[in-house]
Amino acid sequence: MALLSKELRECGLYAALALLAQMHFLGGGMDLPLIPLLTEGRGLEIPFLAEGRESMFTAVGVIAGIVLGLHQTVWESWRQTTLLLLHRPMPRSQIFLGKLVAGGLLLLMIMALPLLVYCLWAAMPGTHASPFFWGMTDSWWRSVAVALVCYLGAFLTGLRPAHWIGSRTWPLIAALVVSLAWKFAPVWIPLTYAIFLVLMACLVVLILDTARQREFP
Image 1: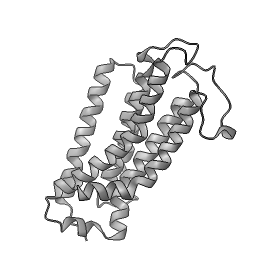
Image 2: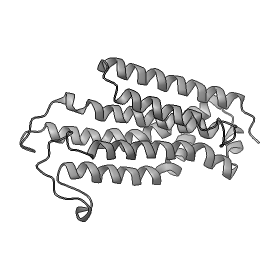
Image 3: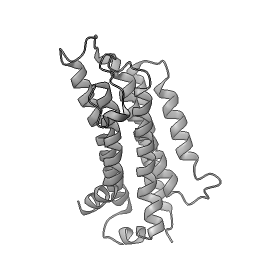
Image 4: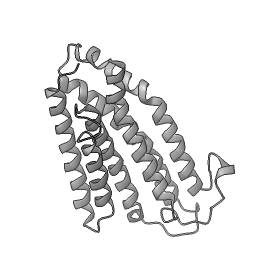
């Protein structure tokens, strides 16, 4: 719990800024932007079908995931606080799982929470003069999965001991390319989410294996 509290506290500022950005973009879809001067009134737009809003939602989530993943690894290494964590009477796997749980919770707060509010608003009668079906939200929920995969890819990139100009960034690049490809792939919806789960599980296994084998200076 102490490790989880530390990670949430240190990464809370990034998460809060990203959450405000999501609230602003999605609030604009409900004609309730946080910064009215920067958002035109678009109360007549069809929820989840407005041009550009999904792209901004996905971009904020991906950027937030990458920042969180690198902060929890590279920033700890630069501050030389990783060794302090590793000297705690805990297995390495438990330490890094704690970091992953904290980052995943923050990213779900950034992505899933505002999206759920947007979904519930769109599903309520009388909020907009357009039809709504839960199937319209599928690509948006895929964006949540994309952000989680990119977070894990960034975490693995920051944890690996390779050179930055070389193979170190390969996990992040691969996670970004593969997750975005599956987001827009015209495949059976349950299969898409199953693939995302398998991809995330593989990244978690690689992260724990890298943490176990790496010799931290």
